[in-house]
Structures are given as C-alpha cells and as structure tokens.
Amino acid sequence: MLDINPILLLITLVVFIALVYYLNKKLYVPLIDYMNKRDEGLQRDRESANQNSADIDSLHQEAEAILASARKEATSNKESVINEAKAIIEKTLREKREELEKKYVEFEKSLLTDREALKSQLLGNSTTIQSALKEKFATI
Image 1 (cartoon, rainbow, N blue to C red):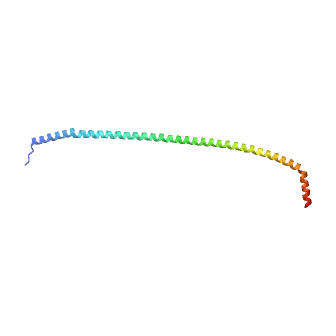
Image 2: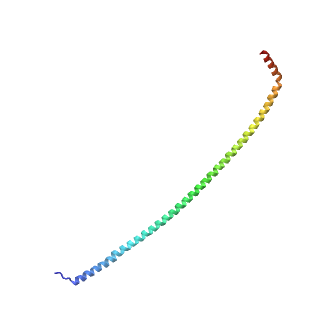
Image 3: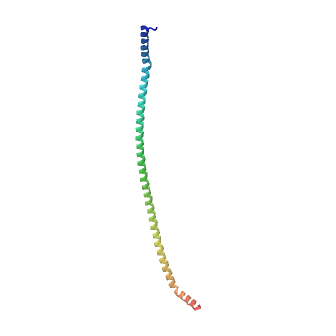
C-alpha cells in the first residue's frame, strides 16, 4: 500500500519550515509591526483627544468666568448710569422748583402791590362811588 517515504517527509518538513520562515519574515512581522504602529497612533490620537477635551473644558470654564464678570460689570455700569440719571433729574427738578418758587413769590408781591394800588384807587374814588350809589338807591 502506501509507504511512508522518509525523504519526502523530510523534504516536506524542510519546505514547510522554510515557508513558515519566509512568511514570518515577509508577511507576519511587517503586518504585526504595522498593527503595532497603528495601535500606537490610535493611542496617541486618544491621548491628544483627551488633552483637547481637557483644554476645551478649561477654556469653557474660562469663558463662563469672563461672561460672569462681564455680566457683573454690565450690571454695575447700568446701576451707575441709572444713579447718575436720577441725580441729574433730581437736580433739574430742584432747580425748576426753586425757579417756580421764585416766580410764585414775585407773583404774590405783584398781587400785593396791585391790591394796594387798587385799594388806594378805590379809596380815592370813594366819593364818586358813594354819590353813584346814592343815585342808584334813590332811583330804586
């Protein structure tokens, strides 16, 4: 039947070992190196992405702090402008009130002088008025 030929077995073994050695040198080692380099690159990219995320978070926190301080400053500026406007309005109102008060006092003085003038005029014409009244009563 079939006999095992040791020479063919040995040649097959040598060819197999040579093929494994050749494939290992030309295919498996470069493939494993490529895969290792790719894994290292992916790990670097992950670390870089994590670092970028940390940078983004810190920048986001810094932006929030800047916005908060800007809001505070805007609020204080708004309050100071409102207070200045109130002060200006109060000053203007005070000046107008003083002006109106002065005009009122002058008006009262002029009324008093007019009253005195009218009173003296009426007293000066009292004889004429009395005679006119007597005539009116006499006709009634």
